[in-house]
Image (cartoon, rainbow, N blue to C red; front, side):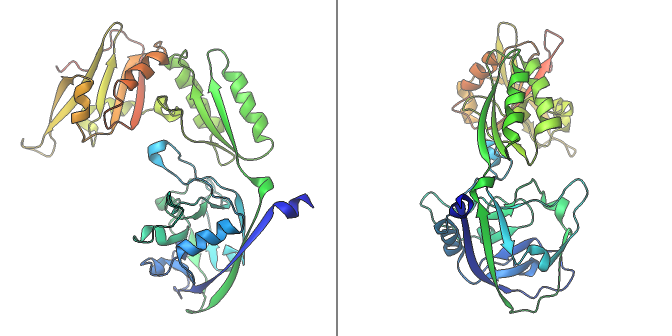
Length: 356
């Protein structure tokens, strides 16, 4: 009885585009007027706005779309059952390392006023087979477009065929949010808390790193999260304001080579008793294909004038506490920086800007 009270169904109709058999399908459904119908199976008979409002009126809760700026890298929502099933119209052959995920409703096209923005083509993609933040329906995993292209091939459906579909969900399967703080000498307890919660179903975790942790400890914890835990079942999304997403502690060492970078970030060097903020000026007027790079020491206040980069690399001794890192980040609050990476070094004094 309880399940029937929590369940909901939404019914809608869509018209087949008539794409050829074997055509790669990037969208199961698009909205009216979309220019993506050549790679979609169906076009909705109603507007995208009406579709989204219908889902929510039926009681299907809005989840959360991918938003790289806020470090929400996993799409989140309740699993939905589509009838007729997608497999009735599309043949899917996924790579072994990328199993087919659940359909979820993220509300990706919804605006602050609750409406759908139908003025661009991208929001008119209603159900994408790859992770597309603007699509209200997506799979619950991370499906990069290049990794799943050609994985879904159209079966033969006559153009103009109208099909009635239903989407059903059950609140018992709703992803649960969980805030976990990693503290010095307490990482095992935090990991155990995540594991126990995940026994009862999918979990969306906001992992916070205590200011008393060292960079070395944060790197160790982050490696464990990336290699062993972060998954469709346990999704790490977001971070506390002023703190760092766990992947900020896992930069690639090759990124420290200025000559190999496609773009230049700020470089913030935290020395034992001082700090140095660097902006790398690029001069493309020189001969050759690469610019001349000139490091320039700037103040925190000056950083807001350099709007071409939204990234900052922080270099510090690996035993530096995160408290100092967070305090330095706060001094750049008026700048454009949204993306942070921390490089822990074991060889003081740290020499990263020796070309001054």
